[in-house]
Length: 215
Image 1 (cartoon, rainbow, N blue to C red):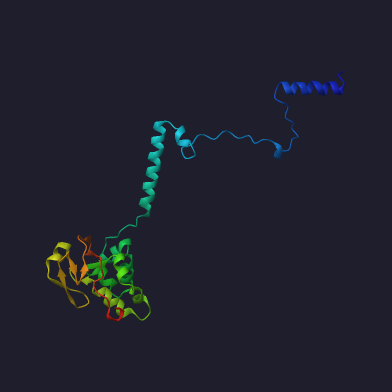
Image 2 (spheres, one colour):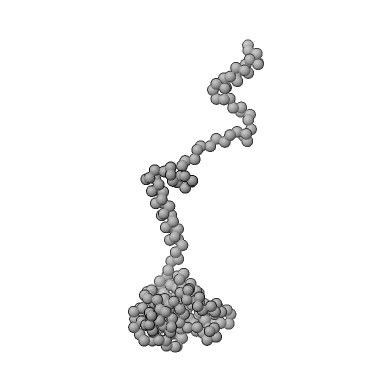
């Protein structure tokens, strides 16, 4: 029978010759992590250069499609049920849409069949006091402002610009000018119109009317 020193020595040599003889009682924290090499990716540094031309083209196509879908998700859906619904769902007219929504004329603009003259957000840069119409006690000025941007009949842009003047819901008539483009009471009128189910919207680059107390 082999003595213990000789038996241990032979066991050690056998381990070295085969697997290296990792001790089973070695703490987990001291063991080298057993991880598989990560596959090459087109998104990691140098990854695109390791892809074949066909794989690179496919990856670029997927990335382009993801960007397109992301952009579409950011676009707000425009509601064409009525002039009211349109301007309150369109980013270009967000300020005017908020004013119309807060006015007493919102129901008329939604359901009575009108032409709404809608100033863009940029138009309000020239009318710095517009926020005052949203303060408590300013309902009269707000309603007066909105009413002068409403025509009580449905018309296209072509029909609008052929008339010499139009009367607004506010009870005043303003001239249609054609010098340097179409204008209404001095406000530049954008060409074209948006058709909704019960009215039209014509864009403006300026506001038509400012209440006297805010001038």
